Length: 87
Image (cartoon, rainbow, N blue to C red; front, side, top):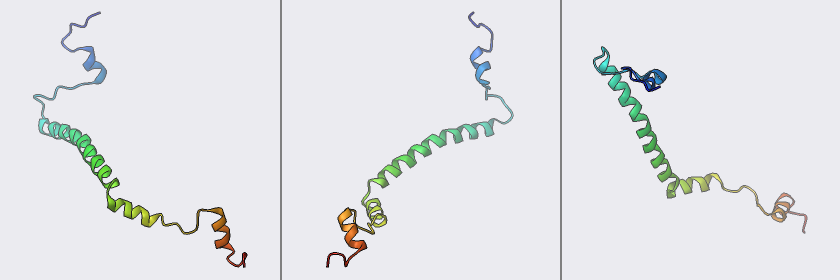
């Protein structure tokens, strides 16, 4: 039941390859560095997006976009749609 062979069952299941002493060692190291760069870049972008979302510049942009075009109150909507009704 206990694996005593040179290659364990873990490497068989996950198809792990030893990167040492291979022909493309430089490319494989570059690939590993690239894989490591993705989570680091993701963390950096997430922190910057959160910082920008809480900034006053973002609040000004959103307030400019969300300027209300008509009143929210139903009574004021009726007055705005028919201004001569109450006269």
